[in-house]
Length: 215
Image (cartoon, rainbow, N blue to C red):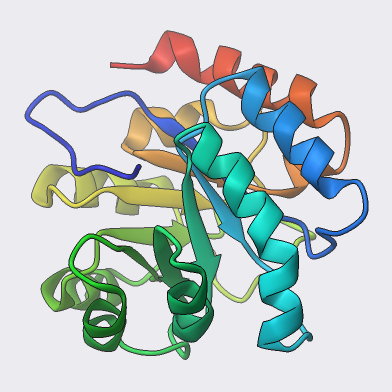
């Protein structure tokens, strides 16, 4: 689960985001990824299908995560998160309000908010009761169109001022993740760097790259 920072900043952790194609052999790939090295959370992200179809795709993946105590977070949709009884929801700036998500999902739900490279949006999300904020993109990415570019300073600033965890996202690989960890990212949200190749090897590579920087 995504937990707030304590006085001694905890180790940076991996937050996997699904590819858009999560049918067919993907459940087996998720098992391989989650069994390769520690993963804190998995975000279910699909586009262009109705909620019933999304729920059918999500259910086996949710069970895989539950069996491994990995937080199962739904992207964008408060209603789908509620339908599934998911561990939480990740909201973009146009996907709904934190207060509405909290009311519908309960006090224990993990609610994250995309804040791009905007400090004001992050502070607003924290004041609204979000459990974490996400900054990015830090590097070029092919997973989605990059409209906002973040720099390392925003992570350092956030870590120095706020206890709420922050997530770094956008083009992150085992080779470039070190500066993000040093700057203060509590979680690294990754997708293409894992699913575009051997997922188990990629998760292990992230873990090895992050491990010397932890604590």
